[in-house]
Amino acid sequence: LEQIAYVNGAFVPLSEAKVSVLDRGFLFADGIYEVAAVLDGKLIDNASHLARLQRSVGEISLALPESLDRIQEIQKELVKRNSLVNGMVYLEVTRGADSGRDFAFPKADVKPTLIMFTSVKDIVNAPSAKTGIGVITVPDIRWARRDIKSVALLAQVLAKQAAAEANAGEAWMIEDGKVTEGGSSSCFILTQDDVIVTRQNGSEILPGCTRKAVVKLAEERQLRVEERAFSVEEALAAKEAFITSATVFVQAVVSIDGKKVGNGKPGPMTDRLREIYVDFARATAV
Ligand code: PLP
Image (cartoon, rainbow, N blue to C red; front, top):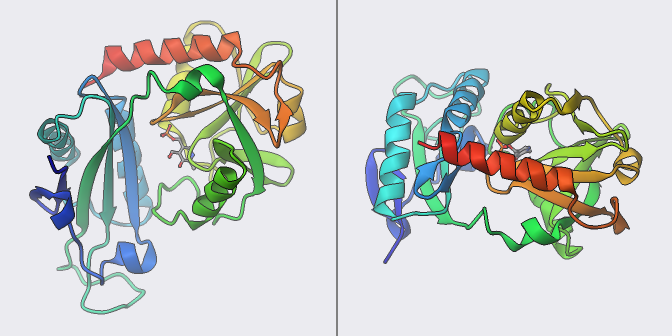
């Protein structure tokens, strides 16, 4: 059965889901995206993703073509039409297709493009959750507004391709000697004195929805959390390291550039936070 996608008001088979070559998402990466996980047919932490969507479009003066409530309805409808049990819903909004290729914003009558599609992934039972992943480090060559979830992901494409070629599961991006974030994830370490450290939000990183939830859940359990930058050396001297994202939840990192973190296995704090997050996800799914 062919997958169903959403394009500007219509639910269509994926092979027929198309936008114009003049779409500004295609020409200029003039667009914003979001990814929400689906667990047992329900959206995970979706209010947080929609709030970030609203913030991102606001930062680039792009008006959403639908209300957030309507967007969530469409997400749910798409999950239903695809009989999706476990996986994710991708959504993208761009500044639409103008009559040519002008850098400046189009005139008001050009409608933004809104598309969505789904994909299947068993996040909870992913084998990498048990084994952990290795990561490599690469220079962070991105633009200065990484807090905006823009579709301009070329730097991350190159970073994650380098990781794939090195048989690593993620690339950690480095700037001024410190880890900014993963190619598509937030980075954490657990220090030798049991402090969970993750970089503070700011224009240097995307404010991860999963990161935000994990920090809150950890603090509610009286675990010590520090939001500050850390270096690869500090990560290699840590007890544990992990990443978070909508499509991995909490994922252990067991090596960096081929060097072991801790004993080279997923640690107890990572496993615990993963369980806590999965419980939170199930309890708050919509
Ligand atoms: N950082 C970057 C650069 C990302 O692309 C992502 C997700 O794609 C994340 C962090 C994690 O964010 P979230 O937990 O909201 O998926």
